[in-house]
Image (cartoon, rainbow, N blue to C red):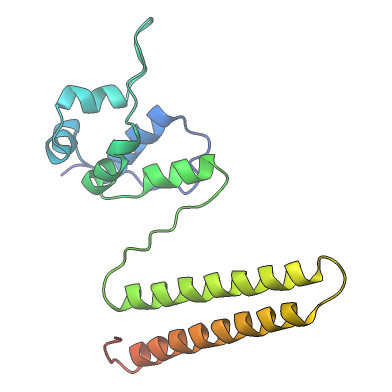
Length: 165
């Protein structure tokens, strides 16, 4: 039985090579297993995880291979690391079933709330709220309430054990 490493939530201290070694270690998979699942040679996967020899060009995973790596190792360490390097966080949203519905609904509520706040801030920018700006704010609040009610309906169905539409 392969030993799995315990995931670390703070990846900022790692460079890209250490992060890839760590990601594969957490998965418990060998380079050969990852290579087979990604359709690559084992040597290519090994090169991603080591410093280049002097004068050798670095062998980076590359953006087009991130999804395949993530799927093969079964963890989100690579996208988490990228997000942390950019000062953000990675949130996976492709959940299945009921969780996907409520997640999607909450994302919509969050988007509508952001638009409502943006409209309010734009209206307050000049120190005077004009009639057309009031109408825009009312529209944004109506959209936010409608979206919130839809999300609440999904949540209530989930709580009652019914399948959300």
